[in-house]
Length: 237
Image 1 (cartoon, rainbow, N blue to C red):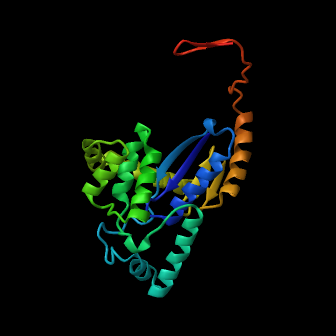
Image 2 (image 1 turned 180 degrees about the vertical axis):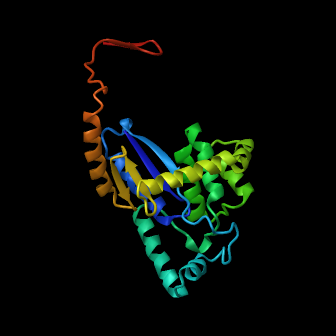
Image 3 (image 1 turned 90 degrees about the vertical axis):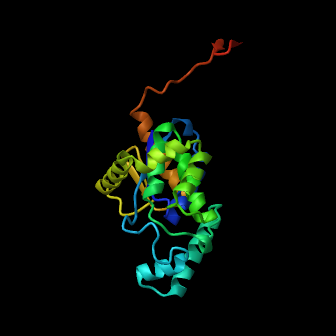
């Protein structure tokens, strides 16, 4: 059964949602029959690579939303507490705000190589915990190397227009499905979970969707075990 997850690596609730989803999946007995695909959703493509107040996210959000600096700090402190409950450490005092396009390019390149989830995780951690500048090509090359990409791979990801086209297609697809924001989880194109809901709530939806999916996919074999030889000449009976 396929689960599609739209997210933006600059979205604090997306990282929290990722952890809550992983907690739900860890409790799901048929998780080997779940295929996950990460998809791009740029929350604000208009942000410059180096915006005003880049190194002060409290001031950046205050100016962007037209709220007081103090309210911005309070909002971020609340999100940091939510992240801690999910097992994450957010260091907003180190966050470097930037446009997320380059990060999404890297994710799109990593996906067909089976590295989409690793790219998401590494970029989330780099942004929210380590305070790395995701607009810096050298930083992105380092992060790409961390997940198994070469320097040439990262250069291709950052320059080939095909990856930007895919980012735009993912965003359009999310809009067509009714996504108002991220994280947005679509399960078997029948159920959707909007926002970073708890692992328990996600597990309930996952179980409901899987029960329906399994009824429509009888190709799953019910195996009766007998004497068997497996690759590697391991024979048991």
